[in-house]
Image 1 (cartoon, rainbow, N blue to C red):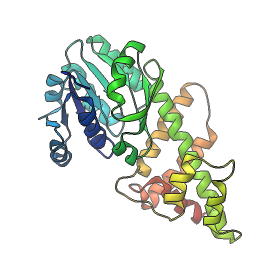
Image 2: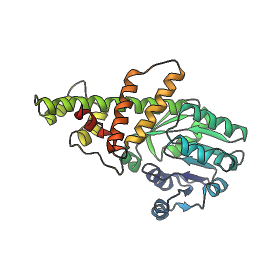
Image 3: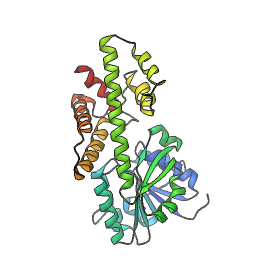
Image 4: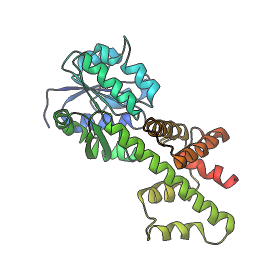
Length: 296
């Protein structure tokens, strides 16, 4: 698509860097990006992404700014406060937070943006780092309908499933429930695998292959299960670390508690992940929870 729009991107991590690359390649718009680390900016420069000197530089140059950061502290630091994006964006500009944050923070960002005449959407992403590279992410959007329609073509550069979940905060809520369900499923698969290994009753590979043929089949089984749990492969690079899933479970549990709900299974999953982090797997792919379960 041809466009005179200038897009901004802040946060070029495992997900953000390929997302920004796809946005630049497919949108037809100029893309200006910033990250505290020079390496991803150097890489993206070869794909036509312009280097910004700072967050303030992005705010000064871009009409729509996409943010993809690790969590609440980073989003607060970049977006809020006197030196944050919202304070520096002119009225009529748009901020899109693609990070995974609490629903309450998404609403806080919207209120701060609205006070300055800036429109806001929360649009967190799901699926793997490879999906970010392939441009096949699932993107869950909380926004007013008109803003969603305006953003949809740009989001489609990064994802193959773009869902309008409702008003601001709805995207964050769906993402948190997605990650909660995935984490709990990983634990269930890890427990089944641990039983197979410890009891010797069935070959672990036969177990998982057979599960794919029945009602226990799932995306999580075929990816987290077959590619990480079964080979006991839990990398520290290019994968979603244990520390991040603990963060997301904390946000999910906080949302439940704000609604008067006690999520026993989510709490148990969070405790298992915390034990995994304490055992030295904080930076490993959170499928390392199998190590905790196998120790008993």
